Image 1 (cartoon, one colour):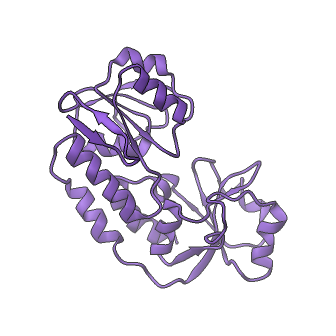
Image 2: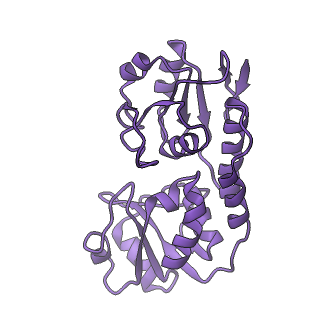
Image 3: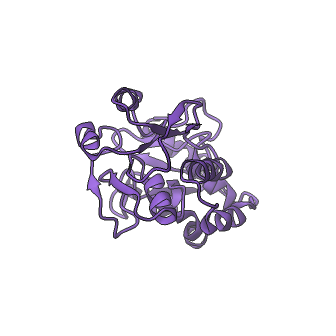
Length: 254
C-alpha cells in the first residue's frame, strides 16, 4: 500500500510495519508507547522509553546507515529538520520506505502529524495520550513573561519563530523575543542577547538541558542578574507522549 508522508512523498509499505527504525527521539517514544514491539532500531539520543532495548544506529544527523540496512526495516522514520535529505534518499534508493515528518511549528501541528503517522502507517486507533495532550495544550494563556531561550552555546543559538518549543512556551504564557525574526534559530552575539534584558524587552532566561546541556553553572553566568529557569529539553521540544507530563512540569517551573 502506498501512503504519503508529511512532505507528500510516497511511502510504499508492503503491509503493516513489523520492523521499524526511528531516527527521531520524539517519534521513537510515540511509536514505542503506541505500537509496542515494532521498533528494532533507534538513535543514541532516543532515551525514552527508558527501557527501550533496540539496536542503536548512531545520531540523527549522522546515522550509521549500514547498521540500518542490516536491520532490514519495513519502515524508517525521519524528520525534515533533524535528518539530512541525502540520508533519506540513500535509504529510499536501497529500497527502504521512509516516512518523513515535517518539523512542527505548533503543538497542534505536531499532534496532527503524529495522528497521521500512527493511524495510517500502523493502522491503530488514535492513542489516549494524544487525545489528552490535545486537551491539555488547547488553551493559550495570556503573556506574562518575555523570554530569551538559548538551545546552544559557542555559538549562541536561540529559539526563534515557527518553532515547536516557542509555541509550547507561548501556550504557557511566555513569549519569545526572537519570535518575529526571519531565522527560526537566530545566532546573535552575546551583547545583543544581554541588551534585551538591559532594555526591559525580556525578563526571563529559559535554559533547556538539550540539545545543549545548560546547568546552573553553565549558562546563567553569561547573564548576570537575569532571572532564569532550567527546564527539561524533552518537555520543551519533544512531541509525543511526553507532552502530557510536560504541561504540568513546565507550568510549575515557569
